[in-house]
Picture 1 (cartoon, rainbow, N blue to C red):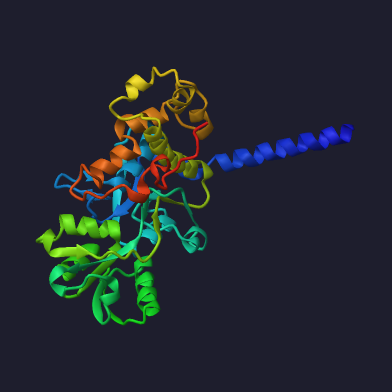
Picture 2 (cartoon, rainbow, N blue to C red):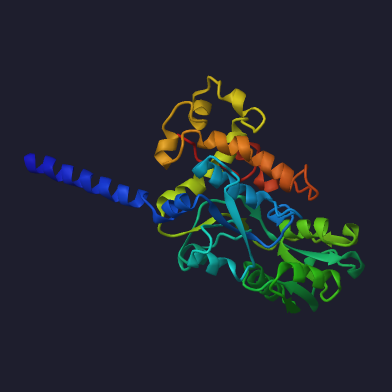
Length: 341
């Protein structure tokens, strides 16, 4: 009997030491010592990540970076943004040039494993589409046989494009250009018949970059699943947890009606779940290794997911994208956060 108790004690001690080792991470230590999160973002996609004339970054992806900074530092502005092309992004993350990549990046098996990354959630459910000039007279992607297509290299878009045309026994001529702004310019200059990327990017391009938005249509076909989300390197479980739960906190807040406008009032709520989320009942901050007011700081400074969606890509933005699959699960969408408890 004594041996059984001894064995059990050793097992518990071993598990505790493993948990502690997994919990302590050099990535988070380096970020705290630096006093700033370095976030890799797009070179400029309206609604997701774009800098204004003063160098201020805004967008749905930018808000994830800001939420993580708010959780770690209590200050959503403690972020340095590094614009990256599709081909630069993975090398930048692998090499440590950035701490976190939030750059309309599709969650795939090989990226999650072979590249040494961890995806921490899906902040936008997307799918690849096609945009054409109305004068082309095309109503469906099935009518694009022989078309020239502008596409970025080093993306899932490039592979999906080839697969789609092959599956539908059509041919196309690719116009491959690395920088997204140059791809757009080529399309609007008439160098290609079609521009293909994630549908969100097509809406952003049409709204923000086209000379006459009404001249361009986005075809009805969505040819792929593109779950876009934040990415970190393997190796620091605590940092990955903070990134994951910072985003989930924005979803949980929306589900419970907590907004940047009413979060102070919500601190007085009698609802035990809301008290736990906002840190009035302590414990969740300690579990993550951050301040107990981490969710309060995120919502006060960044807003909940619905607020972020609306101002960046939804009804309150030039893009006017409907929530669709990005609606909360309670309203028929796919956005569903595990409980903060």
